[in-house]
Length: 106
Length: 123
Image (cartoon, rainbow over all chains, first blue to last red; front, side, top):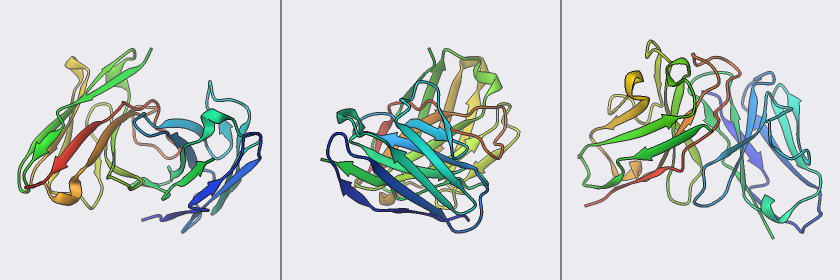
């Protein structure tokens, strides 16, 4: 199975900050990497697919990059509604696997 | 608008069974793969199972293989998860999610997701 790790596990930031979350795969997954945002009591929301493609309807302050084993999610200017937990997920093979999550709070 | 509505969660004793349903609307259900993902209390997201549009391909996480059965009834636009031999560690919110093609293909993505249904396994 492909193991996914994320760092940091949590971070504190302020509105307007630039935030970067990293995700690492145990083996190369090319660009088969998705990012999701999850708020308590809500459905998870797809932000980025194929490592760097912005899902329709997602604000442009979200961006993704990377390939192979190392990936990054960047929020260029943190907004109040962005406080949530972020997960990477590999879509290279089954079983699909998620990273452990990065909690972003104030 | 695509909508997914899970139901069937509840409290069950260890060793018991439960069947979850996911009612889909707003898209042509029989042309998309579907997925179940769960989140245990205080934990992250865990992929549980996936099924292709025609149910010809089915996949399970090792943690549920042999105990859970995914299925779909395309005539009713409904996805199911039959959960048998439940364990305390199966306690979680269970989400269904729509795929982006008919198969579980490399590069697929889960969007959207339902709001989830809580399953509690406890004596």
